[in-house]
Amino acid sequence: MLLFISPTLVYFTFIFFSPLYYLGYTGQLCDINIDECLSNPCYAGTCDDLIDSYTCACPDNYEGTRCQFAGPCINPPCQNEGTCSQTLDPADDSFTYQCSCPTGFNDTNCQNEIDWCDSNPCQQEGSNCTSDRVTFTCTCAPGYSGIVCEIKLPDCASNLCLNEATCTDLPYDYECTCVAGYTDKNCGTNIDECVDNQCVNGATCTDLVNGYECNCEGTGFQGTYCEEDILECNATINPCSNGGTCMEEPGSYKCECVEGYLGPQCLIMDPCFTEGLCQNGGTCFLLDATPTYECECADGYSGDNCENTATNINWIIIGASLAAAVVLIIVIILLSFFVCSVRKKRATQGSYSPSRQEMTGSFVEMDNVLKMPPEERLI
Image (cartoon, helix red, strand yellow):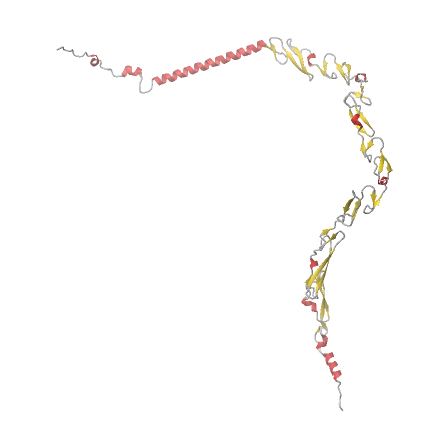
């Protein structure tokens, strides 16, 4: 009996039992999965093992099957909080990137801050534009409103009149009726009433709204314009102390003090009123209101209070002079004695002494000296 084996059956049997059918496995029974991630095939990110394969989960800004391409967004070139996105060109493995800029910035890397006022969006002369990161704001000129000051307002609706003035709309203008004390077109200037004030006697003027006030402090006067003299002597308490008499003066007063007191209010005692201050018949004089005094002494006396007699002073001077003369005489005598001693000592010393020469010196034979010459003979 012949056994027929189908070629197809032989093929599938070979394939099923061949080790090649179990790629990605190992072991005698091909039951152990080979971990392709053990070789760290991913340059970055994490490796996920598959059957006979693996995949790399790349971190942000890395591309490629093995995360081998680092894109420009790793170190973001986008400024001012711009968002970086990148694209890998598989043809040449090159990158391109693009920055998504936040509101208020533009250019390649979002480095340029947009000035929304560059286009002068605010209409009407006198309007001001303020730019921020998001948009612009128009501060409209008087008489206009709207986002770009495009709406014309009635003049009085802009509250141009100040300080409670009344506004009247005119066809092409407005008019402010000022309250008392203010002036100019919008009633914004306070009128200085002190320019023509009536304050007198050195008072200072303080400007008010529609009026002024006179400050009389320190002038000695009172009243609306400081025109009324204050009667200090009519006060309940007498300003003059120690029995002094108050005398009215314009804007002030004067105290006439009783004997023994001085000063504007008789508060200072007169030192010259002190009995016996200047002694020995001296006369006391006031020099100023401090008070300072001076004694004019009688003949023969001196000192701040004339306490010294001239006689005592003369004897002191005479005694001092005599003592100085005695000392001078003693010094002269001592000097004379010293000079004589020195001279006497010098006379008995040296190579020549007249006194010794007389006693021990050699005698000169005078016979030859006094011998008569021979007589001359006449021929």
